[in-house]
Length: 112
Image 1 (cartoon, rainbow, N blue to C red):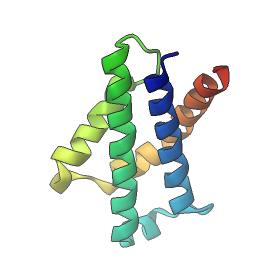
Image 2: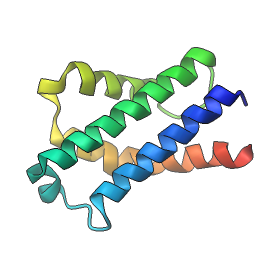
Image 3: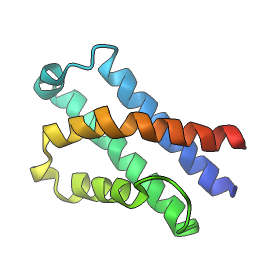
Image 4: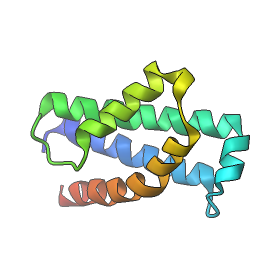
């Protein structure tokens, strides 16, 4: 695996871990909605995840990560549609997609 791809995978993993750290064990949606700083921090981490994935795909368009294009699209939506970011959609990403992505990324990193 190319060094730049490995770095991007590490960055993705770090951002996922940061999101889970920000939320703590409870992961309470109501608390998430009420805390602007928390929402903005998580949105920033999603931007980083999407940008890192975009860089991976620029190096290797066939890199095998599930939903890679959708990850980049989520980043673009958060950045360019900042006024249309939906807390429910972000929460769905956190709850449904990040745990799966984390497992996938950890497999790639462990293989190196």
